[in-house]
Image (cartoon, rainbow, N blue to C red; front, side, top):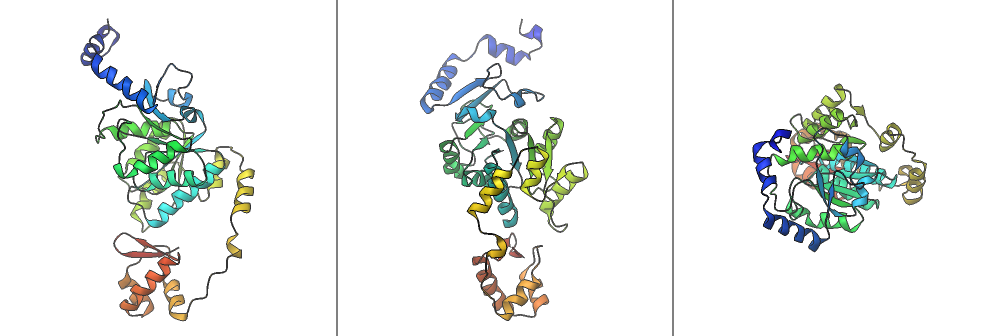
Length: 328
């Protein structure tokens, strides 16, 4: 009967004679950690996710399952972002979480982690979608981040049962859940060959908004975003652009920002001596090596190294891969 309804023979055979011992172990694990299994027929199953092609039949959830029903924005990007990209993801997530959006991402290193951290700092709620079973956190170094997500009213989500390893082919499947749960997907930094672009294209195919932050033409991590923009993604310069596009009011957010943070024009930076001013003038917003800065400024490389370190500690300069620097 199962095969007659179009199920592959292997699935039909498993359903006809399931591993009852494994099912009992999974059920015991769910009860032990307080996790929840939400079927696609449940009222607690997120409606937006049920609309996508090949929607999951069930979700394993650790944390507050009601957060899955909240308005969400996916924030994704490179696993090896620039310091500027990481800061941008965190700042956008913080602002949007304060505006009431739940930030959804994949708990990966780089932009994903920065987005989760920004939402937690708001303080707001965030969802981590895993490409493995919830009995293991991947990557392992994000165990504390995962715990913080759950502790602050967010959730960890997977369609994979306990015991499922973080295999490579699980992550494209995971990406469709990130975009499917969300009203839209924001890509902060991404190379042309990037899993983040898969998430963005899935979002577009699911009829959701796609947002991309442009960058320098010399930054390879901006090329994926530029490709999305050529394909019709919405160009984003501020977090308010996203709220406006999604028709989410943000007057409350503006009041919060004004009340909690000083205005940039009111902050008095300490004066720098002439050589530091020359160095900052030579630095742009595109990564530059020490050799190129020696050529631009005429200052000795030994002096530049210590000056750049001081400027980095003061938050005026960002360090990028390959020992290159940009002005912040």
